[in-house]
Amino acid sequence: MADPAKGVFYLQGTPMLVGMTGQFGVAAEFCRHLGEGGWEAGSITPWKTIAPTEEMRELSSETLDAIVLQRGLAAMHRRMESLERTIATAVEQVVTLSARLQALEERLASQGVTRQAMLCDLGEDGYNLRCPISVVVEEYDEETVARFPEVEAFASAATEGEAIALLKKDIVELYEELLASDEDELGKLPRQWRRALSHLIQKHGPPPR
Amino acid sequence: MGLLHVDYRRVTRALETKVGLDFRSGRERVGWYVLEGKRLLTVHVPKTHRGDLPPGTAGAIRNDLKLTLAEFRDLVGCPISGADYERIIRQKIAEGLL
Image (cartoon, rainbow over all chains, first blue to last red; front, side, top):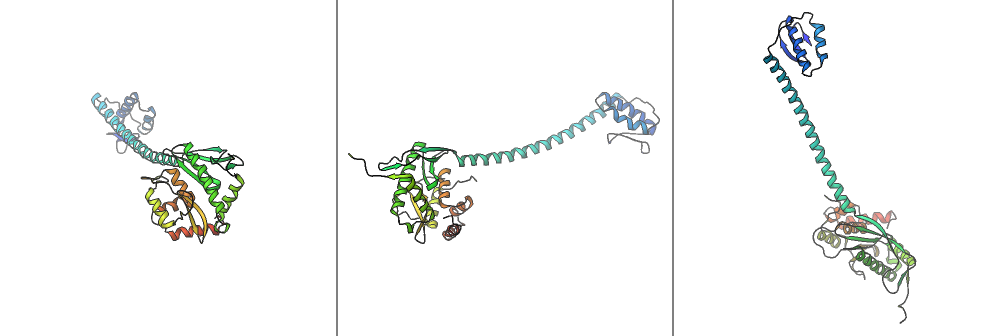
């Protein structure tokens, strides 16, 4: 915008030229010059409404080039600052995401890969399962865990086969220990385990030779 | 800190000194937690191990002890004493869980 009182020509809020009112014709030419360089043609319009008299004067090409260069540098500086802010924000987000990714990886590593497996036999002479039982197998980086949650039997080994074999042993030992215990000396959970195992396991003598 | 990164020696020390498991059973590496003469729960104690326990085993011990993740960490660390653990178990008995 042009300010006739102060004799300053503003372009998009930035003081560009100083001089007498009549000299703003030069600014009009300047704007046209910038317009060719990519400025919005609309930025001249407010000036025309304020400065009625146009005295067209030539600015030297060196002056125009210097002004254009200065404007270009200022714009580049603003873009650089904006870019720096964008990069700083992006870096913050990457750091946050990295921490969340690490937490997720740790959670995954701690949870392992879980699946079900069916046991049809306890692997011990003298013990039969009345029906197959479903156990949980969890694979981690360093170990494989087998669990029978209903009686809190548990085994850990390097491979699934070993873990299941140890789990069967744990179930049989728990069953024997619970059978040998007095009802009074067992808490609520162990009594439930004994009931569950008594339903599931059929104990019999050694096979005839 | 990971979810269950706990040192083997600190876990076994806590189980021995704070929880006071009874190993007088026929099961290898399985101890009973006994309160007022009643066997309430079993804890599967791992074989000798170096460094941190594998997460599956650590999770199983926590589950055996009926503790939350935070409580288990506190038990292995310092804040929870044997008496505190007994209080937690008594609370679960009162709630009908054990």
